[in-house]
Length: 637
Image (tube, rainbow, N blue to C red; front, top):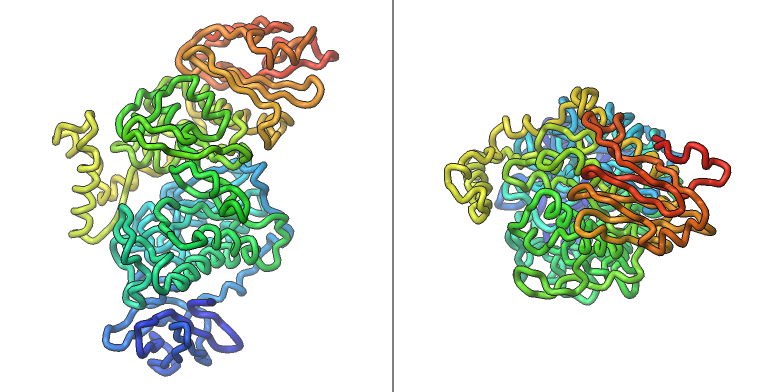
């Protein structure tokens, strides 16, 4: 469609979809060109025109006959805010240095999610770019940015975007974002972007002024009317969002997209919108000039556990991966005792934790505990890397009333053990910013809407927790941080200085060691279920076993709830791997370098290994080579 403003040979093309309008003009601000230039109507309901002399940096509105001036729905930048004039941007002017970048395959993905405004004190693309070396040294392979589409106000999570093609001006200019991606690629890091196609923000949106067909007359979501993907003129709405996805991938060299709340993309048509999106990205999503080996990745956020989303066409929609929160919910129930809301559907029993690790998600068609309705489908045939798992993400921290992180509510030893489980599991791990050093700062919900709307947001936010026992008292609810307060936003900013001091520095060393192990240990790099076994340890832990060719074997023992004794010879998958051979501890989470109050495990390592955990902890073991039996009892890392 090529919507928006496109520079070409000393001028600019303008194109906008406004099927119900008889007349559309482009109006320029502070420019020598005529004050207004009429666009020509096309058969598909778009209007377009070429205006000579309009160059990058020019600012413009669209005048809709009888209704006034509006920014471009496909504006590349809104320097004066989402209700101000749009700015012409020529992405070809940026000098990329990542021509040799090959991309990161799904099998090697380890994601680090961050919010640009709270990741650094500067709260900008440039500030975040200065911390990319730290993420490379940590050992992750991809950075995922929370949504960037511009919206009103000076601060926002990003899910209230209304200018879907324009990077949020509060973080910098479009080329500042390009510099961030370019620098990440030079450091060997992929960059993913969270995009929101299921709704627009509650303030500042102008899409409806151009066309009433952007919104569905039949479907609704928790945020209001659904986007029109299957009704009259729905083909143009689908094309608008597909063009938006291609815009981020091609103009900014992003390596993939995380698709927010895809269960709210309601489409009853013969071919689901997500299938069309996936096909378009594979066909046209490669950035011009890049040597990327694989197409950009598409990762969905979806609670329904639908295997067809991940299956290739024609049986499926062709997405690459999905956020799989079932493991998080079981672990949160097991470690922190959460049992209200959706946590009521999860037991936290080690048997259920093991079952989830073995299949990618827990619900595969069983009835849920709360509403007794079936949920999920059989994931058979899907690869483990197609399931993105976590201990923390922006939702699971920020949607809590006080923004507490998991490590702030459980014992440090339990957090270290859970971290080892996350990074040694066969699924794709996701870290949330600050998790790697057990950051003391919360991540709270924050907004900056106009006063009247902001008051409603504050009341609504506190009312959400009325049904939770901890906030049944109205006085307790009144102490939930006000999303509209700037203090709430500032409290969520990471304090990078604490990462160098105990006990945070020990946690950071643990994460670096675990990620180094995941990167270097061949059996942790296997991207299939082959040779993988997981078993519960009564109700206090789990054992993960990786068998390779010949007698290669790796075992991860995780004590999550308490200490205990793990006799690994009880499991045939372990004992059969090691006739007459000894085991070697590669890492355990209670080493003094990781824990200021270390309580090391005791081991009896032989062909029949036994581990004694004095409390929560985790150990990674590998069969020792015959030539290196001496010193087998000494942990590495």
